[in-house]
Length: 109
Length: 109
DNA sequence: CGAATCCATAGCCACATGGCTAAATATTAA
DNA sequence: TTAATATTTAGCCATGTGGCTATGGATTCG
Image 1: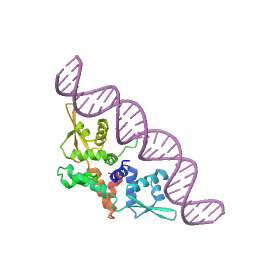
Image 2: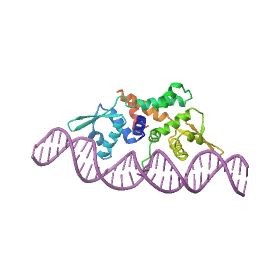
Image 3: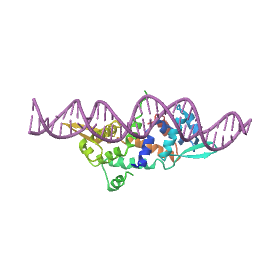
Image 4: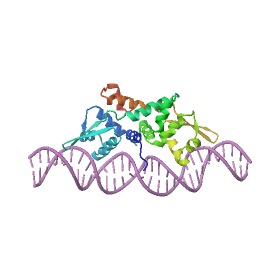
């Protein structure tokens, strides 16, 4: 019943080389059909489909269905929560902790 | 035989709420004994010990052994590789891709 | 309608993960 | 030397993950 933080999903999604490669591939185009994404990787089509679903659950990617084609695209602010977590902690890491960051971290934001 | 990228380790380590909580706890002090870290969590001691090992493998944490006590501390630049990956992609995400980032990403740096 | 295309889902496998308790190791104290 | 303390390692269990093939649903083409 323990609800999992959105950060868990985001970091987990990024913790796989194939998924990061999919992200890089998507950055080059506005959007891409699932098949075209799958075609650029050695893995089987359903395997890539699964990865896309993980990226979607992490809020990093969206789908647009047009006929029988699914166009995948990056979510503009998708990386922001994970990135801001890192920003704040990069600072704390270096020694200058402040109360705002403490407060934010109590909620694991 | 596929060697796993350091980024995989870092992102994977961050993809768990307990481990992020350990990081937050470590930020408040220069270094802490394993027992004191474990004491602040509901999980059993060996469970926290395992998490510390994951953080260590990810290059986020170091140990210093003094007698029978292990002092854990954050690695100063430990977050940097993961953070810079996100920096670069946050930019690409927003639309302005440049060749340097492309080159860096070919090696998944 | 029937066949082809695009893609997801279902089901399987081997292995990883996060949790636990119990045992081992290393060091210090009695 | 024996006992206590700090921490890791060894096993065990349930569940998750990444990979595959085979099947199914939706859409388009002949």
